[in-house]
Every structure is written in structure tokens, then in C-alpha cells.
Image (cartoon, rainbow, N blue to C red; front, side, top):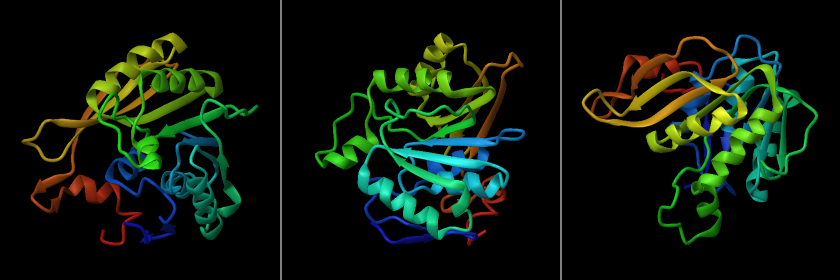
Length: 234
């Protein structure tokens, strides 16, 4: 399903994008923190929604976004141009591995493909957008280790198994787990995702649990508060 998704301060046209706006992406973009990011990188931007949410939240930041799928990269750039943050957003059609930049990023954010070794979607572009193997995550932390600033943070949302794998591999880049937020659909359900923050600090690990629903079809107060600056419904 395509079409326009309207937020309070911008719109996202989803045509040409294999992966549409989803709960994982908006949760990550609303939760990720940094004290004063000047340069932000969104890896696998898709529609560009995470990058635009970052631009809204951090008005002093320049936001770059890379996307391997050419139609999606072009759509993201059009969305950027149509947004109030156009002068601070830039989309690049490239793979994460091939992205060559002299910049050091204060915040790197990604809602990456994560269905490792699962049955691949027969539609090629959707398969690329949704699936990755272990080497992708190794490359992701290696790239982050190269282009993060000294105080830079890497924020990701992943299923539990992949999150644990990334935390382990990040140690090779001297990146440690600083914060972990366990996401569940409601209080009685198991954890379905983890939002993790990796950096070079040595602060004690912060751990939280976050529930999306308090009852069927009823969002929690925490979810509505988190997204009140973005969603028209809140």
C-alpha cells in the first residue's frame, strides 16, 4: 500500500518504496537521543521518514540518508525537498558499505533489514529491504566504528536475536552497549524488538521496557506521549 502519510510537520509519499512506514521506524526515530548532534546519518532511509523525524527533533543538525534501492532513494529525496527541513536533508543512492564520506557523525540511526536466513520474499526489492545476513550487521558496526565521532552514538532497532549479535560484534569496533529498550506489544507479551544504543562511553548500562498497547487497539500513554509531536491522531 502506498500513498501519502501525513505527520504534523511533514508528509511522506511512499510510492516507489519497497518498505513503507512502520512502527519500528517511528519508534526508533522518536526514542534515539544525543545531547547535541550536528551530523546525523540514517542508514537504509527508505521513504526518508526517520531522517525527517531526526531533522524535526534536532533543528541544529544536518541529516544525510543513504539508500541502496534507487527508486526509494529518489523518493526519499523528493520527500526531503517537500519538507520544511529541505536545506538540512540529503539522500544518497548507495549501499552502506560503499558510502564514502570524510564526515564524522554524532548520531547514526538505522531500522535495518533483519530477517536473517528467513524465507526470502520473491519480490526482489522487498527481499532486499527486509532481509540481511550476519555479514551485513558486521559491516554495519564496522562502518559505524569508522565514521562515528568521538562522542557519537549508533541507534538501532532489531529483533532480540539480531540485537544480541550486533552488541557482540560491536565490541570489535570498541563500541559498547549503553542503553537497551525492550519493546513489547503489551505488558503480557514477550519482547519483540530491542532498541539499542552503542557508543564508546563506559557509563552503566541503562535498561527499559516499553509497551505499545495497553489493550487491543488502545495505545499506551507512553506511546502517545512519545509520538505526540509527529502523529496527527495524538
